Image 1 (cartoon, helix red, strand yellow):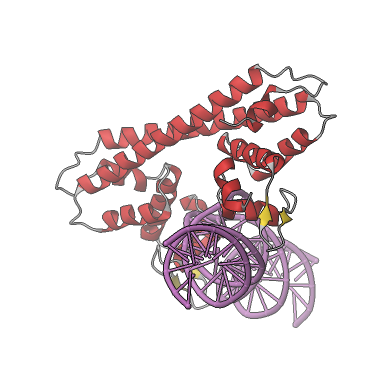
Image 2 (tube, helix red, strand yellow):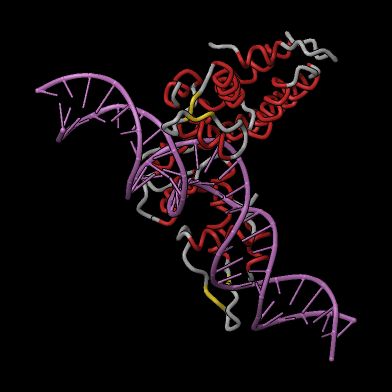
Length: 130
Length: 130
DNA sequence: GGTTGACCTTCCAGTGACTGTAAGGTTTAT
DNA sequence: ATAAACCTTACAGTCACTGGAAGGTCAACC
């Protein structure tokens, strides 16, 4: 399987797969005699795993840790679970931040006429010392 | 006022203030005869404005647009309001994404024993084709 | 056999919004 | 006189890619 087939099967782009190889996140792919990278089902599994890990919010360092668990038959599931719970907590904190930001925006928009004139509660609020 | 005083009065770091000057977001600061940047109340207002705009989620391009509205006495408040409402919508979309990610993580964690053994629903889920 | 188009390769630069670090000049206090 | 706490510029690094250039390979069609 060439890289673009691996890309469409895994959900990553070909560029991203090469990048993951460059930074050592995945092992260098086998090459055909033409120099093209070759992928088998096992490598597709790893690529898909990484795509999913990224999708649920893990960064590359964390995704690598998870991948190492996947690869290790002596793993302990508590390690995976603790990474997941920690990420979930981080997402929760980020969500709360974004909600607070959104609240602020709504409060400002509510007090702004939004007309043709220059008077604007939004600009006043943003410039105000707090 | 030197840059570190401007930094503590505005909520930006001195580094960030220099960076904003470099990229043309703010006008070059006046310099004392020693070459140090000098800030007055007007520039502090602009810096604080930018800090607040960033805090509520605007990127630098959007913050610049808002700053231009602040500077322009002929502005129309509907322009500021529309930027705020659009950002609010974007935040809402991001929040929904993060909530969905968190849901997925919780669902995976729920089905994982989290013990000393290798069996792990999390790793199974991440590797599974969807 | 030639040519087109779709692949593939490497390498380098750019993104956004800073932050860190180095090497040096200035000011203030002791 | 000296130490510390400022200030300056310039360049590299961060994160996770993405875009583009320059060139090699392959499959299909005329």
